[in-house]
Length: 146
Image (cartoon, rainbow, N blue to C red):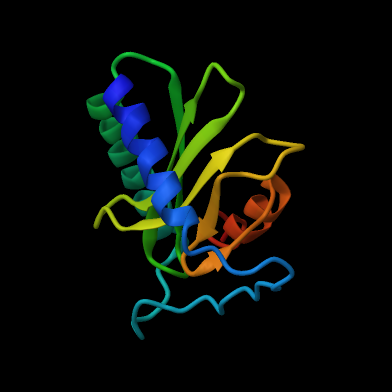
């Protein structure tokens, strides 16, 4: 657990090095489809959502047997992607959050900081940076709906 915390702290520090200058406004990217295939039926979306839930539970059980963390998941039909959101709760009141595509392991975003008040050490979704918990919630919302 201590090694994971050290790794997350190191990642947060490295990622914060290329943060945009203060006052720069982030613009949300347009959601892109992964292909031109026909949209899945409601039944297919339900099945894919169930598979997403199972993969997320399995991943969480493999990685976090000792507690101190929680997770959520969402199957985004428009992106045809199962998203996995891992939250590590620190005794200092801060959170480390990592946002993945569960199938590929691609890291879409991360947050390291408090839920309110102070500025986070790291806050980004893809190439967009944020300066608060509220901005994080706004940036992640398009991925966690639909």
